[in-house]
Length: 380
Image (tube, rainbow, N blue to C red; front, top):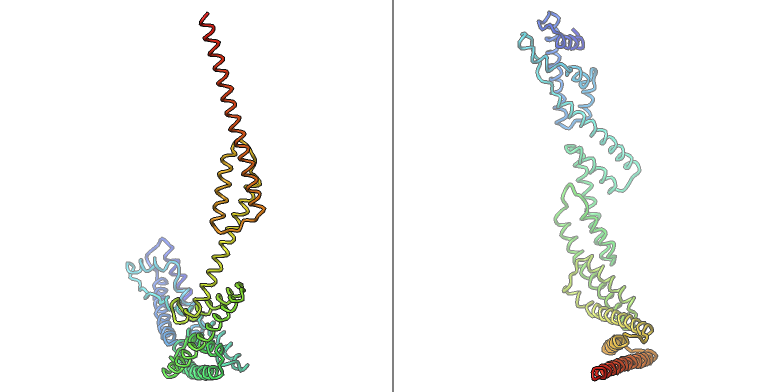
C-alpha cells in the first residue's frame, strides 16, 4: 500500500466510531511502521552528515525525492497520537517516534549554508579583484565563525594572519624609525584590534610593545611639554583664550594616553593651570563687582524722598560700603550722585521729623487749651 494511502486509512480509522480494525487498517498500520522506520534510518544518516558539518552534502541528501521533510510531514499526521493510544488495545503495530529534531537541525543548516554561500561568493570576488589581504581575512573569519570545522579554511587563515602580523610589525618599525608617531600608533592599534584566530608569536608581541612603549613615552613628553610651553607663552602675552585652548589640548592628549594628575608630566602644566584659574577668578570677581555697581546705580536712580527716606539712606550706605570694601573703583559721577541722594534724603527725613514735632506740639496745645477750658468751667 502506498504510504499516503496508508496514512489516510489510519486517519479515517481514528476518526471513525468503529474501532475493530479491518484487514486494510492492519495492512496500513504495518506499512506505516515500515515507512517510519525507513525515514528514521535516513534521518540517522542525515544527522551524521550534519554532525560532521557537511552541510551541502546533507542538504543534497535530504532533497532527494521524496524529500525527507515532505515524508516526515506526511507521516506526522494529525491523528497520530490518538492512533498510538488505540493501537496496543487492538493488537496493531506502533511506529517508533519520528526524529523530527533532525529536520529542525537540517533547516538550521540550510540557513547557515545560504549565509556561507553568500560569504564564499564575496570571498571569491575579493580574490578576483586582488583585494588587500586584510579585507579577505575579514570575510574568511566571518566564514570560520559559521564553518568552524573547515580545517583547510582555518589553516589558510593562520597563514594569512602570520603575514599580516609580520606586515604590521614592519610598519611599526618603519614608522618609529621615521618619527611617524601617528602611523606607528595606528599600526599598533590595528594589531591589538585584530581578532586573531591564531595568537601572534610572543617575539612579535614583545618587539612591538618595546618599540611603542619607548616611542610613546618620548612622544607624550615632547607633545605635552610643547603644549604647556605654548600655553605659558600665551599667558605672558595676556592671551588667555588661546592659553585655555592649549590647556584643553594638553588635557585631551594626556587623557588619551592615561596621564593622571600627579604624574611626572603634570608638573609641567600645573603653572599654566594655576594661571588660568587665577585669571578666571579675577574675571568672575570683576563681573560680580560690575553687577554690583550696576545695581548700586539703579538704586541711586530709584531713590526718591518719601516717608521711607531713613530706610533708603541705610540701604544706600550699606551698598556703598560693600562696594568700597570689595576694592571696586566706583565712578566719580556715582559718588557725586550718592552724596546728592543722601543729602536729599536726609533733608526729607529732617522735614518729616520737624513735621512730626510740629504735629505733636500742636496736639499738646490743643490738649492744654481743652484742659484749661475744663478747669474754668468746673470752677464756675
